[in-house]
Image (tube, rainbow, N blue to C red; front, side, top):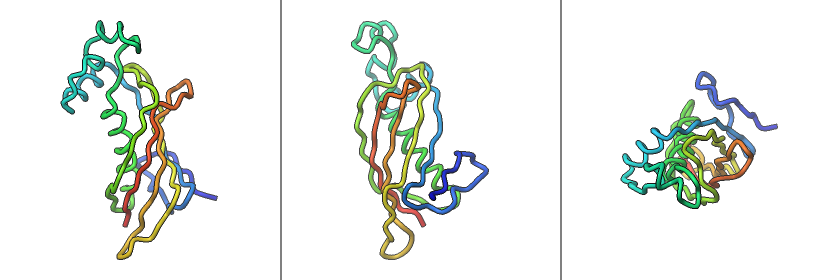
Length: 148
């Protein structure tokens, strides 16, 4: 049975095999959402202006896709680098629903495939998700990383 760790930085992830899962929670807040979007060069008022965002189809401030995607990719890098070297090879994102600037979400990955690298280490094929507290899938992702 695959090892399913909590995401405690004190414990390394252990053996990586198909079915291995790791996750963490993240709480957004409007200041963080605006600061991240500005740092990423995203001046869309849906991330910065509560008045404009309130009149939008979303009814409030939303996090940028750059922000949510970065947190998900960062989780992969941080968790997998606990006892291995890791580099990202490719990531794709599918934006399904908005992530609001004042909500908590679950960031999660599961290993779908482990493939030996021709020289050393392994490629990991990953499926990722960002899920709202209401259980709604907000973002799905596919990733490929090299660990050694």
